[in-house]
Image (tube, rainbow, N blue to C red; front, side, top):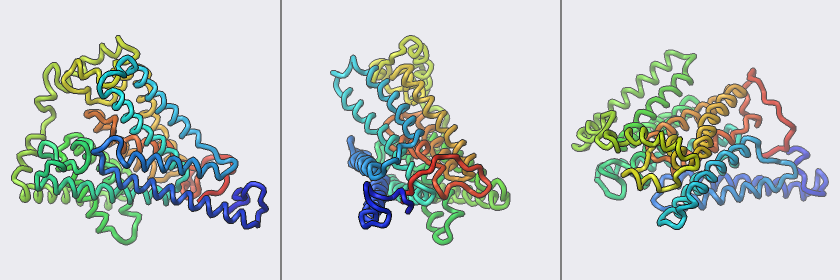
Length: 425
């Protein structure tokens, strides 16, 4: 450890310094453990607030204590900016909803949204002290969480268990199949990232990818299946752009695995083919018509122009039979221009931050995180994704990643210029 690891008033070689260093290490690893347990618990969302929310809050409080053990360690500027953007989104939905606070469920809805978006800030707060090794550990834990969710969803589909399915579609212990499908997308990308980087266990990782893809397929979420395949192939093309032979082999292997999964599902369940053909369409009956999903998109556009403050939470359901099911339009029509601009800033800014991180490091982690986030946001563009903890988590990781930490910058890549900082675990 550097001299910056000294305690207040202690000499460099004193026992107090060693004790403080140990306290920092214990606090750092305890925070990481609590955070990763929360990742494992993310495949259960049937309660709000959920135990996972308490775990994330615990990780945040431990992070604050960890920072207090340093005299000059500050919160990264990007994390502060992320907090301001998320705060602007929150202020927008609170202001728009103030006239309706006394209505049933409005207060609870505001609380649920606040818990969800706080995970974005917590993720950024945690990630700013991570290096590549910590991000890769996170990926492995996220994959494990998704394998559990996929197995539960698959068992639910095969047995048609009402707790693990919705309308015959797999969902595990997650609210609905669409949220379930979007939750699994990052794990597929992380499997592709880790595959060429581990010496042993490639077959285990390949099996995990197959289980997770099978879970996405059984969700019968059209956008989740399309988004997963698009983002997976985009990442594979990027990762193997200099090795065409391996690229062809990987793409061919995934396509063969997809065909095998389809055949297995068809032979295992008589309902699978019927359900898949029923879902294999661009527009269902509830998508069409004046009050259908796509019709509602057109109808809210004049409402956005006419009401810059926004309608507030749970108010659009008084006009339409269902929510808007589009986070881009929802942010504007429900939370006003402030909410819409905050969402656009967050979404576009995430792409900019990821590309800057990549240019400064030439590391694949920023691209893996960006592909994962894009997949989730694509799903949220056709569904009500504002409560999706995994979406806000990915925002936090993208913005919280500190590329100036040792281990990120590859030889020959432009190194980020930063002030000298104290050593951390």
